[in-house]
Length: 126
Image 1 (cartoon, one colour):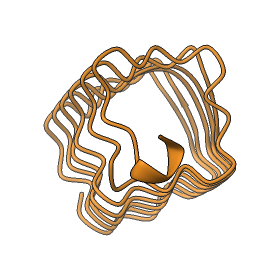
Image 2: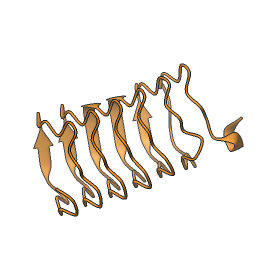
Image 3: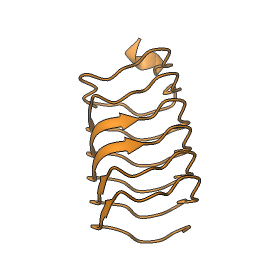
Image 4: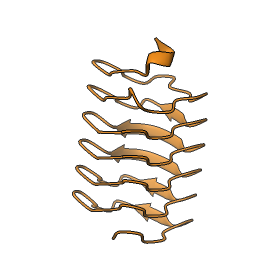
């Protein structure tokens, strides 16, 4: 599914585990109860998306854009979000257990209620 344009789609209860979604446009998408375990989202655009009750365990997000996304009830445990942009994102009740966020752009991100056990945070926040 490399480079597919799914902008403004509504995706519920789908299984994209292990899928290659590199350069996929998911801008302003509504994603609910979808499995992205081990998926690759390199350079994917999820800007202004509404994402609920998702599983991103072990997913790869190199340079993915989640700016202004509304992220609630996510599990990013062990995900690899290298240089991911979460600027102005809302992330309520997201599990970021053992997630390496050292290169993530968390500028003005709202991590209220996030579980950060073992997470590696950007130096700018420490």
